[in-house]
Image (cartoon, rainbow, N blue to C red; front, side):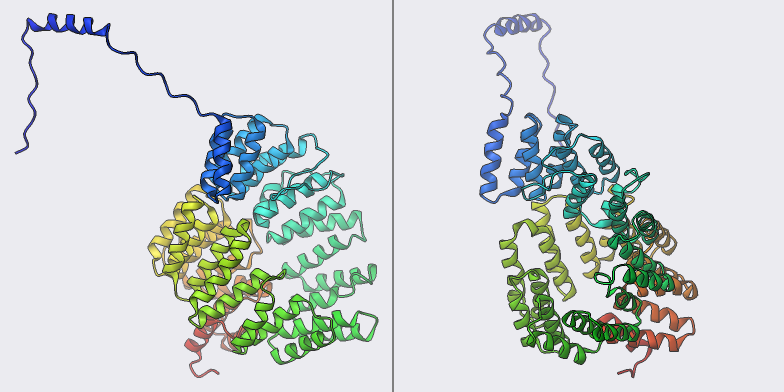
Length: 577
């Protein structure tokens, strides 16, 4: 039995005496200690800078954020820069808010506020900052870049161009387009502004908007090369090949020197390999630069799966002295696809400190992981991370992806959990963690993680698609999965991954016929192996086996190492070679 401490009862006549004693004692009780002094902003900034010098980025960012709340605009400015550079987004957001509050007419402050808001997918906040930025008086030195320095002084459209450049340093085109679209006044806009919006729209998987902006720019400036190119590519993505070819011919006629390869490029994007080959040979017979024609013919052969021709053409370029870094990358890729790991690693090693260093190191690391040389693989990436600390989050994501793709999802999760302690609430790390949870077989946890992220960013199309696809792929809540994917598709109508998800969820719901259109369109846009696997499976179940065989054969020629594609072909055609 639990004992209860008894109440203490004082005798009735003791109460007055006690009161007198207390009253007398009050005169000798020491005064309450003074409240602790408020933090000193200057001291906090010193502590933050010392932490930064020691490599303790999180302490630096959070200490600077505290200093910003009690200091002037220059301290809030510095705090915002440190928070962003350290990828401590909660600290960066506090500092950027404070800076904007202290200097609401500063374009620098507004640009920083929009940048951090966008990284956190606070689209409405970013849009309000963009609007205020465009209304604020420009400064002669332009918008500061992330790593110091400044962008060129403002011209007619340079304020928008500078802001867009800064936003694209930190966020992907779909988020940047979401922040700018509808906020920027396009009535009477210059062709340069319309072209910028058209290019962003195309990169944001909204080809219809890209076509509309580019057409207006071309209407006002018919010889605008970039606007014409955007228009051509918008027609390709929209599935309008006749318009794309006609527009490419018009561009070649209007600008025969700079637009000479436009038609060949369109044929290649449309998957018309033979037409592209003939067009390039026609150009070779004319006055086109021979080295550029040969490079394009080599890439065309590689993309269509003719590795022998591609290897020969790239080798000829190297022997003629016209090779560049991309030529060595292609030759290394060909060696990897043909199973010559040593030659591939040697090629990637030559690119380890080039402009293609990260891509080369990631590919080399994948080969090393496949050869069970985990230590060597991770050393390649971590050496690059030491050289480029500003890319630490992206490199962590890349390393986690490689581990997940090679059966080491648990190690990838451990890596991400460690990174999240340094970069709390970072969207890229949290998203990758949810993805790798599914790879590790923790489907329920993955779904819960995506749902939690979506609760804070309910309109993020990447999260909507990821959750919808995960549910669909595991036969869970299929009607809800389709509604999530549909919401993502309204924001990114031409994103091949989202189109693939829509086709896949319809297939999972037993409607193979209605799955075909989005799957076919997704494959036309990206020629991705996973999409080909899904499209072929839907064709097969819909009774179109020959069409499925053709899709799989073409996709295997392009992506012979795709395990998912190999698996689905083996399931439906067990004796296929």
